[in-house]
Amino acid sequence: MSVNDDIPFNRDFPLAPGVADEVVPGVRRVLCNNPSPFTFTGTVSYIVGTGKVAIIDPGPADEVHAQALLDAVRGETVTHILLTHTHRDHSPGTARIKAATGATVYAEGLHRASRPAYASETRTTESGGDWDFRPDVTLKDGDIIEGQGWRLETVATPGHTANHIAFAWPERKLMFIGDHVMGWSTSIVAPPDGSMVDYMASLEKLTQRDEQLYFSGHGPEIPDAVRFVKFLIRHRKAREASILHRLAKGEADIPTIVRASYIGIDPRLVSAAGYSVLAHLEDLVTRDVVATDGDPTIDGIYRLVGPLA
Image (cartoon, rainbow, N blue to C red; front, side, top):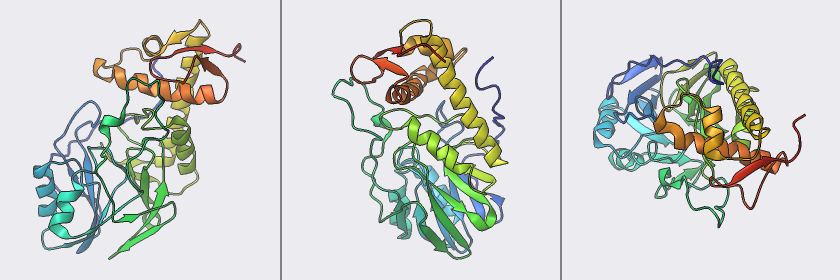
């Protein structure tokens, strides 16, 4: 049995690229045609409000998608551009939309790693970061962004990236959750870009909030969202237990752990799975449950510090 089996994923998302779909009153979504094993059917951008609107996550540097967003708001004024995070499938399209609309760009900050790179690291996950991105206004947890007919609260959700934030609409009990929670798959947490410690803390934080409908950066909306988040927390804890179970048999490198823990994985996702395992191992090393020689890196050999309880 896969540790994914208990998560109620929904991969039914027939939205066509370039079509502005009003999914609930005051919220439209437009799909970019950039499908992949990591982006599902593509990046979803959101238009919030009517008349004077915000665009959330303009997507990659894709002229067809940018034009679709601008066509969707023809006759309206874009007052805000909001970014959940700065991966290259979410933020590079910002420059095109800002140039066309003059809207103010809001984000948590510049792209950065969740921790400094170790000198011993020979490989990195940072190629997916949009290092050129610069917001006009930086946001912190609890900041309010208001427009015509909408009021969003910034919710800091680091983990997938260090600068990941979500935008809650408390009055509507919904949240634009970016890539922190997705209905079609688990999110990638790949050090040093991401942090499992931060990711788990952010998931726990969401269980204390009232929003019950999430709109993700990829795939369909997530109803009964807090219940779904609790499934994700259990999944991550089960993944940790699977890693520890393999290490109880003896020390192992990350490819060995991936083969033991990810049965039947899409070969295109093996590398990402390795970095997810590394994220768990970093946490376990910090907690003195697992040890390695030197820094915890993707190339390390890992062993239990003592017998499992």
